[in-house]
Length: 352
Image (cartoon, rainbow, N blue to C red; front, side):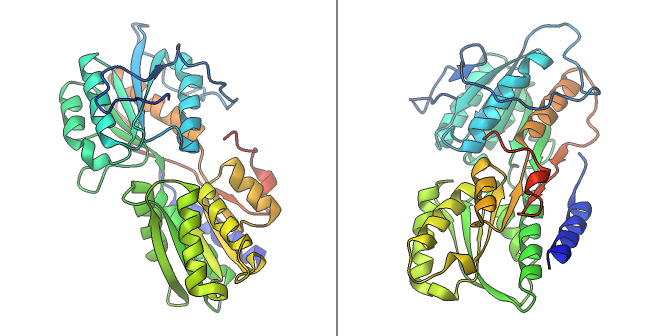
């Protein structure tokens, strides 16, 4: 069985891959939350940019780059910010953090600040991308390079008319890998529940769509519900409700992120109605918690992503554009990591 799963995952990866903060207290913040020089947070080691990485602007002037993120309470985004700081010097960038704190209006205000202060580029993983469209258009018209980071703009706006590039993971592919792995693990079918990420977020939508568009009739989805935020306690509450409704009929859990799966695992451990040892669990992200859960046997599959590579790709795109070059593609995917008990030692232990 393990050999069949490994073969399926390898095929899925080959076919699916494509080429290329401190908080703001007031919603209408006019000043940046944090700059590279002001931030004293420890930044973990990571691989340097490749030898063929684009070089900073020929003038040698410092380039102001903003990172607008949904919230530093999201572990993945806190780690992403550390990578922005880590590699900024290699590219001649001065990076500034704008933390939306899950409030889209803070993102609108941040873009306004970037326009007023003549930033060169903005990278963003916002709470509600659609709410920022008018502000993004204004920034584009002001000549600011717009990059989406980790998540994409809504369908219809994911074009170079609204942004210059997107660097991230193919969340549709992640959902497809989850579905194909589950079908291979249960060739005679199974009952599964889905605990989605933050409702309406691009990653939530795509991880859901990839999964549901791939499963066949052998997979019976007992229930599916999204969280209000990327919060483990939200996932735990949803899982508790699922256990109350379906009990031991639950054979598998697909959760959109590893930390959320932690909440699901805790709910199952606390219940006398379900034996977690008999439940196949899938999470996405590839953070330390995901690795630990795979190691302890409570997470069957972890589908990981590299925010280090994502950051390098974004910085390369910015540098190419500001130096007058042309991107090979306006979308750059990072390769997914397939983490199971069999492959755990093939990857470095995560730094977030």
